[in-house]
Length: 169
Image (cartoon, rainbow, N blue to C red):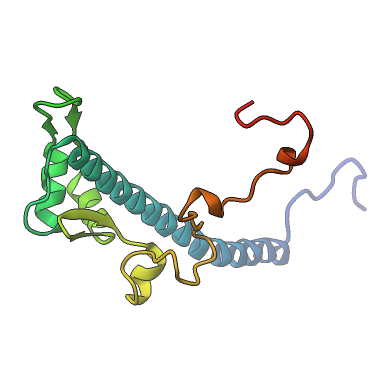
């Protein structure tokens, strides 16, 4: 007879194999998703870097500093090296984006091109199918807001119909 105070605390072989099988199934589902998350994060970082490069290049051009030289690769290197504006309202202002690694530059360059002397960020949706390199406000892209051509195209707020309403108050 067994002693009632002694109990068998060990797991059986079937229980152990069941747990291992469940862990294997869960990891088989989770590991590919983790890879996609890493790819998605890398793509978002590349897009952000490309947007920053294009924005800084365009801001520098507006201030009178021209980084555009040749193709996108040379222009990107010029933006990273940076420059200081001499003269005008922005005299002494530094424009540049130092600190990007070669890996960051290569990733961002997928979303950039030079058109008419301007470094332009590619629309990521259009970059995949290569139909249009940049967004066209007249296209069927629902996520792109359409800016009115003139002020008369803007509907006045409902408050304008209320008595005592004054614009700007």
